[in-house]
Image 1 (cartoon, rainbow, N blue to C red):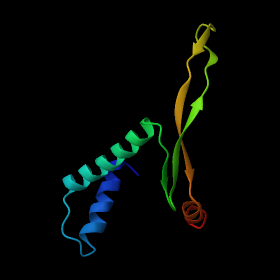
Image 2 (image 1 turned 120 degrees about the vertical axis):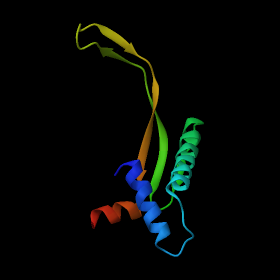
Image 3 (image 1 turned 90 degrees about the horizontal axis):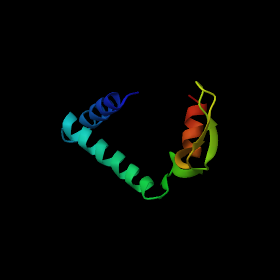
Length: 98
């Protein structure tokens, strides 16, 4: 599912369930703000936990020696941080049972 499809489904669900009409532009803005808040929290070194869905955390990847595939030359790869997602129990159960 793409971000655009996700927003379209949100609009359809909100507009069809007795909520006041939500425009696609407003929903797009809301989703963008939520995603930006999540990214900012992770960038600040935080941990995000959404009960029932899962948690996002940062893992440190240490520096290592890599190799340039074209030349075979050894290259120093600097350390970095990677985002790690761990699915919650409810999400795992929902995915397992279709």
